[in-house]
Length: 442
Image (cartoon, rainbow, N blue to C red; front, side):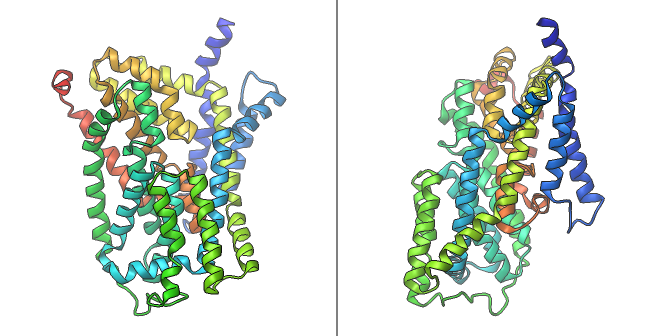
């Protein structure tokens, strides 16, 4: 039994081959073909899934299929599928009813052109900070970003990227974020201490990102007919049509579960659309069905990714990564680098920042104690780098949802998601120029 376990750990790098194939196919998709027409994500993940099942060692074929299927149908993943379904129905229903148009009309009347991108990013930051979830923030704000891009002639991936980046501000910093809870619990520190340590990294990163979006937004010019919704914004019905969006945002800010917020939005969209005459019962049902169908590829890719990552874990890939990243640590700076690399690599293998934190939390706590890293610092590093990676992987739930709502390939959005990149850079600088352990405790 001991030899079998040792062999599995020693050869765990073989379990990472599906991830390498995934990176290769994505590189080929971007650089080996027309960027505007990359390989479909469903094809990419189908190929990776077949390869993962075929190369998993030490299990019968039937057992490999069961491992893959358990990952594809994991409880957390199915919860995300429900969110995708509800988000699709709400987004399409709100669009058909004119709620998105009315909301955009209202914004465009009061927000100068150069502040549109800044406003989208800041709105996503504030909502995610209150809600504590990046997925709920993206579901609520991306449809507005899409319509704003259509009206102003802006670059759609950039508008969507501003929302995705802002969504990770709250995911990383909020007191009620699941990543914050996981990081503080595994490291044994107070949430307020972690918030202070995290804010020193997140707030400067957000300010830099705001400046970047302001620079790009300074070149945005409204077409003369940019404020032309289904119902004129000055008309009473124009204000009524904004009710579903305000209700969703207010409910989210007060901490309502996203699985309750989205059905509320769907219901209010139907009521408002029917009362204003922009929807009929039939068109409401058709729009909801169309929205759910539009999430089909997104749901399929999510399940394929979940199955592939379950195979990687079963093959010992995570165990091999942990051993490889921690066995040569000798200094505090190396320890902080190892913690950052460990949670980043684990997040690549799980595509879920909370699960990544929980998977390596105890190991990180041991490393932190050994090298005199404060618990608030280790919790901050865990949360930061899990969110940085989660915000930039094209098979993560957040990017998949944003891409599904905007009918884009996730690879088109990534170049415009600046906040995780800036946050990661600032945190790396803080590691390289970290104060002594003694001074940090003071």
